[in-house]
Each structure stands twice: as C-alpha cells, then as structure tokens.
Amino acid sequence: MKTLEFLFERILWNTRLIVLVAVIASLVTSIAVFYVATADVYYLLSHLVEYTSPALESAARAKLRSSSISHVVEVVDGYLLATVLLIFAFGLYELFISKIDEAEGGEVASKVLVIHSLDDLKARLSKVILMILIVKFFEHAIGMEFANPIQLLYLAAGIALIGLALYLGHAGKDSKRQHDSA
Image (cartoon, rainbow, N blue to C red; front, side, top):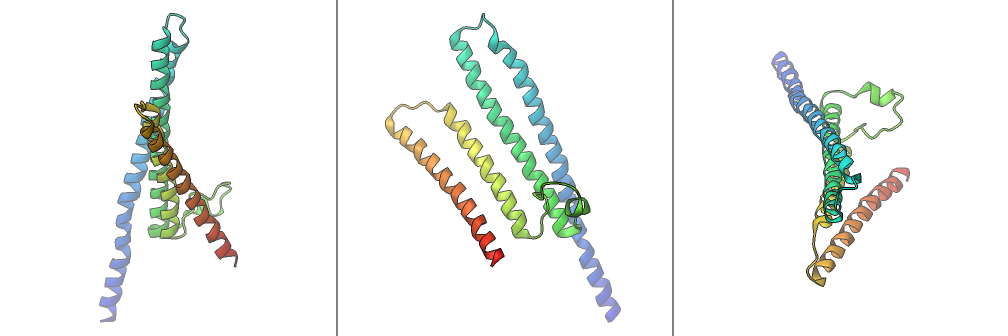
C-alpha cells in the first residue's frame, strides 16, 4: 500500500509539469507580440518621413500627426501586452516548476521577474494590465471629439478614476512594505 501511495504521489507531483505548455505558449506569444509591435514601429517611422514633406497640406499633416500618435499608443499597448505574457510565463515557471537561478542570484539589476508567490504574480500582472487599460483609455481619449461639455466631464471623471487606481495601487504597495518591516 505504501508503494502505491508513493507512486500516486509521484505521478500527482509530476503533473505540475503540464504547466510547461502554458509557459512555452506564453513565451512564444510574447515573442510574437514583441515582433508585431516592433514591426508597427518600423512602419510608423517609415510613414513619418512623409510628415516633414513641404508638399503636405496642414490638414493632411494634422491627420497624419493624429494617426501617428494613435499608432504610438498602440505600439506601447503591444509592448505592455508582450510584457504581461512574459511575466506570466516566468511566474508560472517559478511557481510550479523551478526557481530561475539566473533571476535569483544573477547580476540582473531588477528583480521584477522574480516571483515568490501567486500573490506576487497577481500583483505584477495587475500593474501591467492597469497600464494597458490606461493606454487604451488614452488611445480613445485622443480620438474623441467633444460635442458638448458633459463629454469633457466624462473625460475628466475617467482621468480622476485612473489617478485613483494608480494611487490605490501605490497605497497597497506602501502598506505591504510597512507590514513587512513590522
């Protein structure tokens, strides 16, 4: 009976390796999103050469400027999404498979990718996801045309809520620091 229990526990423990599928898929997807965002940067820069053309009329220049700013926001959004996937892959690996020795004892200045618990992973992902939402809000805000004052009020309320979310995110981090030092 003891051998059966040992065998079952060994099999059960090794099933955690199925998480490698999610880790590899997240890494591959992250690389793909980095590639797409970088390609977007290339095309954005190639279109900006046209911006300095003296033959470009001011209305066309304003339209190009507006679309360029929208594209920059989309690129930032793409890089943030790729970062979320990267953090997710590292976090899953460290939580379920093994600690990453390079991250723990290496000479990497930032420990942002070192994940010690599920709460750690959740906190890191939520911060990046909040940044993605802020970028999306900004993207929509620059494309808005305000027909009446209430729409400006809605924009101001959205900005205030973003500020509150950032404040609460920092307040949570500061209270955790005070709790850890006590």
